[in-house]
Length: 324
Image (cartoon, rainbow, N blue to C red):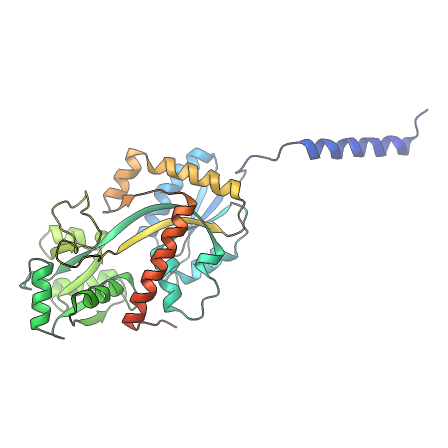
């Protein structure tokens, strides 16, 4: 006759062994949060929503875009750093908070290179240099000549101190050895209006913010800041073609996860997102905004972030910009 206690122990051991041998549930099993540290409507938000929708379809789980603007992207980035590293928390990062902010803010509570695991590069867009139509400069060479003839008399708008539009202008000033007056604004829209009305004569703007106005003749496009011409605006030359070799600025987006996220999950996300970026409709959605998709391995993204980090350190130092 079997002893009841012995039977219970045997059943418990058998059950435990069965659970130990059972395969773990495949990732993902619940919705994924994709943090965007900026307001809806910007480049980071667009990238998150375009990629997130397709990722939801491929993974069979909802990808929720969570906009957390504030402190130039620092607020949402800090929340992403502190989130559980379980594959259910991602950051649609950008050049601003990943490689520029660390040099502008002394009191950040995170290190973007140490605290994030790179997943894949997503897309990039150049700045577009535009001027008020009354300015007698039709290209970069003429702008430089004019600025040298009028030192400290040309006004360049930006979307704010330490923004990519500000630092792009500072990098241009340094490379061309010219002097222009910086006029910061609270966002890209006021900067565009300022340039259209002639309060400022020059603006290094993100393409989605200025291309329509340039096409309408309210602004004159001089050059883009990518190394090569872009398919969306093949008629607009690069700054490099205008006589400043090595000048390149891209506003980019890339996908990151908290550093301790399991490598298998990083590999899964990398593969899925890179496949998404190959889809013609995805490429077209980015192209309409003047952006080009890229894709990468996590290692390639890490190397790219390191190079951008070093580049912006020099630009910020030269500009003297600080935001603490």
